Image (tube, rainbow, N blue to C red; front, side):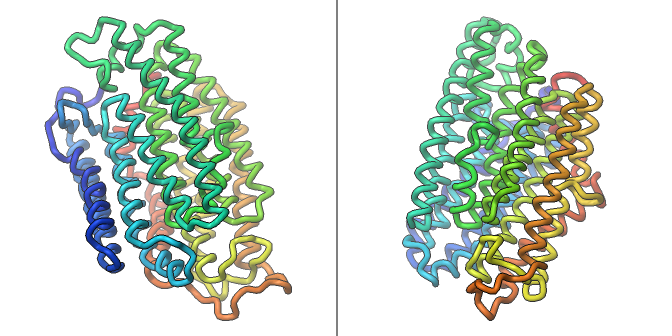
Length: 503
């Protein structure tokens, strides 16, 4: 693997996920009713995590691979990319929360204290970061299951009937689905241990398993791949394992919707890519199946989004579709495919976080989220309106915004692999995405409000604490589109980690 000879022992992989975990303990145990302190701790913690992640990425780009705890934790370019994305989106979500959650509390919408919210928020982010830095295949499952428990409580945070129903469905379906990932991880460990070719390595460490995976018996390998696809694919929202996703994204507090769609499903896809991609050289037929699953996902997700009247559910189904693009790119196993898949993972994190924040801003200002109940908001919420359309066009792959370049790279990778049918489906899904997202935005911001609606007469733009994260993400959509070379070095190294089918 790239950089293996330059492995360095460092405390950073441990610090980056333990920091939000301990900060969450402090928020819950020591802040009581001091809401400002809870907010400052959350924002400062995620700022530090983002800084540490950026520092790790810098060191990795200079040729290092960071390990600690006898290689139980290991950060290469792929892990560093994920840490930076989780840290950056987590920071913006924490800033956004300072006003959004305060307003919901003032209206009595939640029955729990803000310290519970911010504590769980930090634990949720900490468990995701743990999953990205662990090198132990069993601990990878444990970390992802930990994200389910912390985020499940956040999905049900409002504690009303709809939130409790969504939280119950979320926990039940994901716990059952992720159990398959446990079976897959155990089989992967057992298969690697049975090869007797590890030398001084460990069958528990992903970096060592990669060296012997071609010796795992075919039957064991096939069952392992199937279990990992079902388990991690369920958490990533891959069709047909996606039914939990619309309810959870719609009923969770908007900052949590941002994290669920912006980073959690991608962290699960990271786990899938980290484990399944190592099988590609010995069993290349797996790539065709994964590409087919990805194209099915992107098409089904956007077709389901077409019929949605709830703005957050529409965005949730769109996330299902966009995860199909990432899965297709990574599923190819080629350098170009992995680069395009990871680039779209980054771009989708930016675009979809922005769109969920815009939906939250509309809910904050109007108290409504059904598209049929909204209209004519562009003049009263110009910043939110502009941010939404930037995010929508970027998500659809409209040039010169960021989504265009990552989707184009995936199209080219599919064409180079001779999978023209998949490229055609991906292009059709992008056109449908444009239709769905722009039509919804037109109705909400430019359309005529229905005469029977009961929207407040004093609708105005959201506070700075909410629109600053939105404008930051909107600026990134433009920057990554106008200057797509910006993330090239880290994406290039990360794609090299995953690419096992040649250039």
